[in-house]
Length: 344
Ligand SMILES: Nc1ncnc2c1ncn2[C@@H]1O[C@H](COP(=O)(O)OP(=O)(O)O)[C@@H](O)[C@H]1O
Ligand SMILES: [Mg+2]
Picture (cartoon, rainbow, N blue to C red):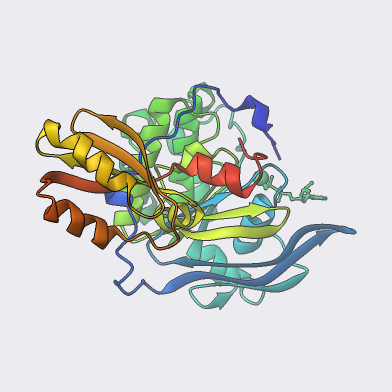
């Protein structure tokens, strides 16, 4: 199995804002049913503990980012979920089906893409997919149609007669995903799929994941590079040394990690900004960080900042504003806090 060291992370990686359409539902909305349920999962290799009583839930339709440094236990977890590896203890269920008791059903339900994929010499893309289609026992009469569908989905329709060995890394990865989709799995388990992709291929990959999500699939995607996943996932779990450190909606994790919440107030009249800054500065726990033009940026360090009180005071002082919003921390900062900087 290929292991990439964190030092290989391109230094140009920058955290991107989380797009609105992958944001978590409002907390009031009932969550969809749990699709993947991991309870007290443990795994030792010889005497070495790789997973230690891991608990995790992934809901139907989630794009779940499984993040952790190299050696944290991501691949071990994903292989157990795909019924390719037996746990030493605990349970893992997918759609209520136990991965140890019913490995066959699990293999029908799950599409697993490993973190490294072999190069198939002297095979066209169509031959490659036809070969695996036959292995999945898709009848010959249906296979052509299924292959056409997965090629279209992965945007490789025009490449079916090309040699797979000549593909770029991004194309090989899409070819591998096309193979993973042949048996129309409900749950996709993708181990470090974005590693080594250039930014453009990564954006295409993100769009593909969203398309698969719209088709009703539940997706688990792992990475040791935070910024790779921050724009792809609606929920994340952070694993370190075989234990889950945090899990939940991306925004919720970010909120819970903040000791100081940051806000930005935009006043209608630029001339009102100094008065607004003055008023905010007098609020308990609030501190103005900067006042630039019509925008006043400030931190609230109180556990329960009196936001309603602040708004009341602004209105009472006739300071009219066009927006009042909270700034969310980026995932990178959050994970650095959680893993004491061990995650790049
Ligand atoms: N086949 C194996 N034999 C022995 N130790 C292993 C084996 N596979 C993984 N490990 C160990 O288990 C731990 C978790 O590995 P892995 O699940 O591959 O982590 P990750 O995918 O997060 O990098 C690591 O310490 C690794 O060295
Ligand atoms: Mg791994």
